[in-house]
Each structure stands twice: as C-alpha cells, then as structure tokens.
Image: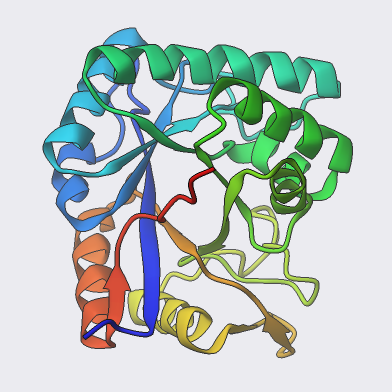
Length: 259
C-alpha cells in the first residue's frame, strides 16, 4: 500500500577541499535520499567531487550539483553583486564540472540546488532565478531544480518546464512571508532536534509551518534539507529518517517527470 505522504531528504556534501576536511558525508549517506555536491566555488575540489560522487552512487543516493558564489573564504554565504549573466555562467561552469564526474562514474545528475547566498538571492530576485534556471535547462534539462518553497527560483524553473522541488529546512525558523529567518538574527536556528523533526512532519503532512511571529504559513514540502556538518549531524539524520518512516511518510528521492 502506498503512503499518501512522501518526501526527499537532502544534505549538502563534498565540502572538504585540499587539506581541509568538513562534514560526515560517508556516515550520513545511508540516511538521506539526495546529495548536493559542492562544485569547487564555495567548497570542494576535483578529488573531493570524484570521491563524493562515488560514495553517493554506492549508497544509491540521487546526485545533485550545488553551485555557489566564487567565495571559498566566506563559504559562499556572503552576497556578491553578480549579474544574471554571471550567475548563468557560473552555474553552467559548476554544473558542467560535476556532470563530467558523474558521467565517467556511470551515474546521472538528478538535481541542481544553488548554495548559500546564491540560493537566497535567487529566491527573491526573478532575474537571477531565471538565469540559474536557464543554465540548468541548457546543460541538464531532465534535472530537477531545488529551491526555497514558493520562491522565485521555483517559478523560474516551472516557467521553463523543469522538474522542481519546493525545499524546506529542518533546523531553520520561518518568517510570515515564508522566507527563512536570516542566520544573523536571533532564533534563526532550531537547536532542539525533536522540535526540528516535529516542524518537518507538520510541513509534510499539513502543508503548514508556524512562523517566529506565531502566524501559520502555508508551505509545500517536496524535499527537506538537513545539515551534515554539525556535532550531532549523524544522530539527527538517523532520528529524522526513523521518525518520518514511523509517521507513515515515504522517504525517497524526488521523482522526475519525463518529457
């Protein structure tokens, strides 16, 4: 019997580079269904991309490109004044790099999810959103575009006929307009794992989330982002996967529509 509810669990990966090791990729892969792999701009390097692609394929996890701003020092979390044309070019470049490694390892690119500041900028800037969506459409038209639920990026992808996934966050609080509370503001993060999981279950089953203000906000949850770099990241991944299944929610990668 099919469950009426299904959701994808995604995690950012491949963030090590050079001599620096970040995240718990190998340990977390068994509990997620899609991996967003850094493409070298905000994190990652060729060796790390190759290793992460191989690990994802070994675990049957859907592979996605995670293009960011060219800001290794700031981990791609600082806004930059990039034009839509620049956003297009950097998305094509990074998606192309990941797609080459996926190709030689015998896999397919399942999705594209912008990283950090680029993700947040594309959520509210239609011109940037359209440039990123166009890049995905030109390079990997069968891929799914992940974006903040209800954002300009989702609209841009849908306009081009791309598969899209409305993304929600387990450990972030929301504003009344459906955007995430900025990290620099108080209470941006949910530090209680049970509270974070309860928020996710409600978003999936009821299509609603309570904003920091107390207001109820309608939200679509196709894919849930969990973070793989915290001290308790592995325990949280195990806990959320188990709870979703107990709640009768099927955990699986986003199914792509075919042309």
